[in-house]
Image 1: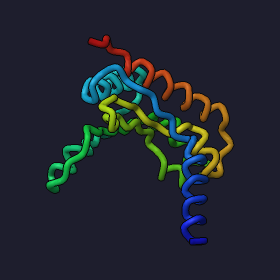
Image 2: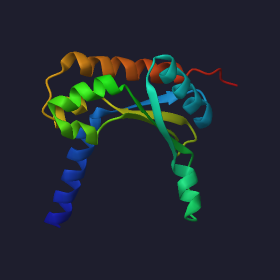
Image 3: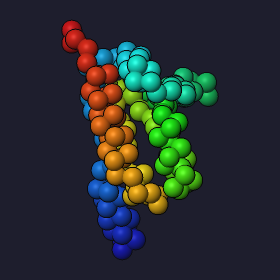
Length: 149
């Protein structure tokens, strides 16, 4: 019983500390949101490196999954500056936004707060982290704007 309580407490603490993940609702479909993200990212002069279709990958192995795609993108100049401080930052770069349909059928966009990089790696770059946060907020806000109906 004590082990079960410990596991429960650890699960709660872990979920509370997961506040570095920001989730925002999109008024668009998963596909339209992804298309919007790519367009916005390219317009900002960033590179789109890949789009991963989690639902498509699940289907290839005979499994079902709600719509879920991840856009991987970044700014090599910014990423390189951070990696020069701590090469392990490369584990968390490039940036990514997960677009998915939740269990209620609503489209969500999820991404990590830029402070994750500073908290988990040895970097001193508050302005760069702030730039990442502002950029991710702007991208997701714009990407999720579609007329309802």
